[in-house]
Image (cartoon, rainbow, N blue to C red; front, side, top):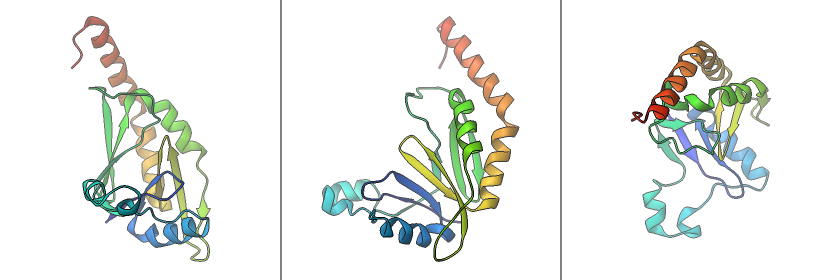
Length: 161
């Protein structure tokens, strides 16, 4: 399974599964947000450093912003070839965000999808991938809370790493 990170003009970065990539590009372009041309906007060197656009990825993160994540615990959820880091301190907020997601449909392809929007990026997932993500988030809630609490205690004692 292949996942892409795609930057669009005047929009947040999207991470999308290969089966939804083309419908997403068509929809965003129709809304006046085409795929960004980093080489034009910045410089050829910057475009190469960013890995091009779109770029194949295997790792990403769900992040609500406002956190440095310096040594903070994360849970890694791997679904269909994409490993997603979820900060334990943001677990409740990420859970609320996921629970508010509604089924959407690309037009004219008719493909169903979910878009999980957080801070400055979004992931676009097919329904089974979204269901697997939601299942893992719910299943790991206690683990994430325990890890966040242990890290906070360690910070108070000055021994967090």
